[in-house]
Length: 559
Image (cartoon, rainbow, N blue to C red; front, side, top):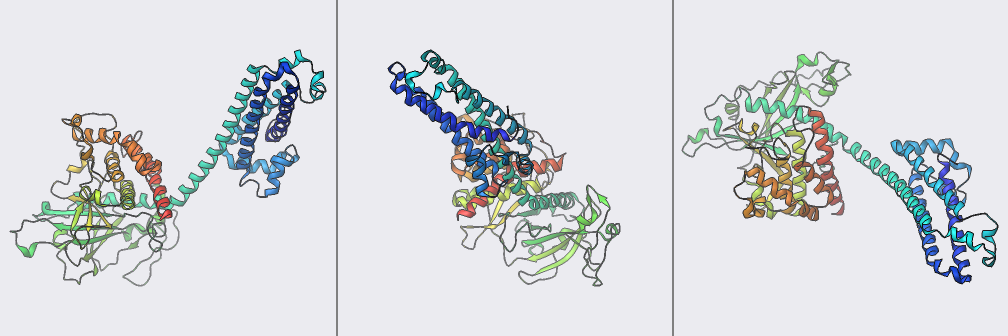
């Protein structure tokens, strides 16, 4: 009995002999009238073994891809000389083990099992015995009837097929795992960027929403809108994998009544918040500063650890604040900065991170040329094409990685997502996608609106994203699909039930990857709290963002 990789060569060598022997028997029984009724069975066995040989050849050729580069050597291994010494080559076995990883030992065990089954079948068929190769008229018919045992053949062929199927599955899984690993590696910088952005987003949320920077009496009339990136993969010039600096663009507005003093009404103003490390904190690391007092750049390498990463790693994406930038005392009054030209960007000050005093955020104000008309996503769903809806869906999923638990309300929906309207007042601009956060009741978004327990609804932070993805896939609001039976239910429970019914529709409309992301959102399990934040972010990225990124890459590749 052969074990190890050499069993593959033995199996490949035996299969042609088995096929030839069965074909010989099929021809021989044509001359024996009493045995002619068995010819169909033998033809079926022959076809079955030919099929198994073809599957095994394809499986082994797939297994050797990337292990053996020479096409002639592969042909030598699996066709010309399968029982040669090449299968026993230690270097080949090491490369195959590296490729199959944890599947390697199981692969060899199943290959050995297949080889044993084929050897047993060859004994049943009396391969190599003189009488089996003699003229049919001289056969021992009683002995031959034992060979024709249908139960024995059916059982053996079923076991051979099962072993072959397992081998193919193991190779397919190894290839899929390798492909997934490569995709994760290619998107790993994006995930790392989102992890950094998430820390700063939480700090900004605590500081802007709950901090002491709103000292005006009109706080409740202000609204903040955080801009999301509708195309996470970006363009060649502004690819997020090339530009890992965290910065946040927000629109600040005032919803004061029309009878209020018009001098105090704010126009829409865009603010750009950029992280910077406090000078005192960076003194812990090995730093070098340029002589220019208005620009500091971190240099050198530090061994000081801070939350699992070095200070130098945190500082590498930001600059230190120039001493000339003043601290912001009040957001409202700071928005009344000196007149600026339309489109001009100006640094007006900085705010401290109240969660982590080693970081601050500079505030750059951008005077917009005019008002910013917007439309809620739920209003324009039916007017946006499939490609654009996919961009928005991917942008929202990436936003969930960064902003779930802070800027994303626990019960947000498509009415909280706004798109800037174009000049025609009808179409929308995909590069202007915002999450709206009125300051009238800043704590409302932190409390779940679920009034009663319901499976997959209570304490599911990703349910709102799943509902939005369903709407974006079908281009319609969920309310369109409500039935009379859905009335008199708690609103969020109703939406969950309706969305669950539509998952098959989503699969037909948007494909497998998109449907997988929707299913993960609706039936999110395991990590439902944000306590284990890093694991939560990684799971959301793997199970929801990655499938959508695959679709986005494929869609853009087709267009």
